Image (spheres, rainbow, N blue to C red):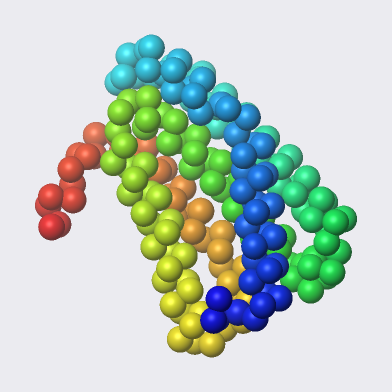
Length: 178
């Protein structure tokens, strides 16, 4: 709260709440269904139709939620959209990015490979902390924070995508480094 003014903290609270509600609506309870269906199948070769249709449906619903979130926040709070317009538009792109990552998390959860889920979420939070430290030390403004915030979701999705791309990667690779 010391980095930003009272108005900026209020705008952030509104934007993050809108983002979380849109993410919740774009999920539509799909996680549990996908995990159940994939867990019923062979753990090594899940049905690709379920995987790809989950990703496609989640991205489509996330894009609809993204557009709805932009329209709703712009309609209810036009002063916030006027002041932080491009920052808010870019900030809300986190919705489809995280939707993609959550689609991959369902696959890992069904295979009981929670390490990559935890690693990606840790990297996401680490990115936000490092972003706040950079803003603090470099004395950057709130719009800069809004513009770089989707990088956290992108970092999460990249870790998930790399783990999905190389499924034979050892789950305990951290032991090699620590």
